[in-house]
Length: 215
Image (cartoon, rainbow, N blue to C red; front, side):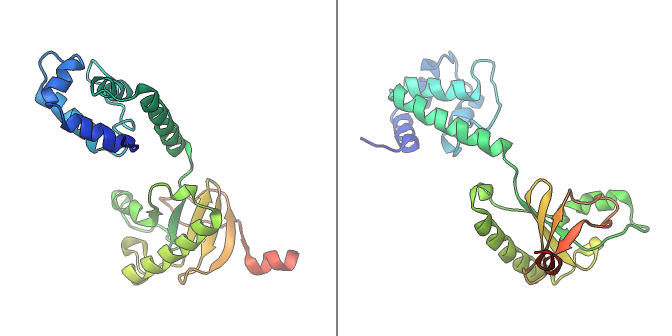
């Protein structure tokens, strides 16, 4: 017996004509859109459960459950796997996703706001899916590597924003490590990223040397 839920479902679907499967699911005259949805569900790592799609017959979860029934899956096992996957996706949606903010000390002069808005994404570096699940030590280590890679890729210049001064690694909503261009931790920051359209304001930063002196 195949233990892998996805592989099992894909093989069961492959053994039956897709239109026959859809008719058994209640689609009297399967359309190309129905066939595309079936294929999309099979190709999606989350079986489409991360999509709120609805085709006037099934929600994403309803479609997957009906597909499991029609193809003869063990529904006790299917329910268990679907519940586990839904929990995983709920955690992904609700979790804070750590990121790097590139600090150039930018202060707007004559730059048009639309140009700054278009380029804003350059100052935010995201990590791969599931990164937030790593321990803070591993997160920080990868953030330091990403900083060094980014400096190498950009040459330390960020277009309209100017010369990169440091990076803020936000591991919580209002808490960040400050990283030098070589990835070294040089301080901590409490509070949100400063106004994106204006640039860096006075920061509530405590340098490592100051923190050590206070201890």
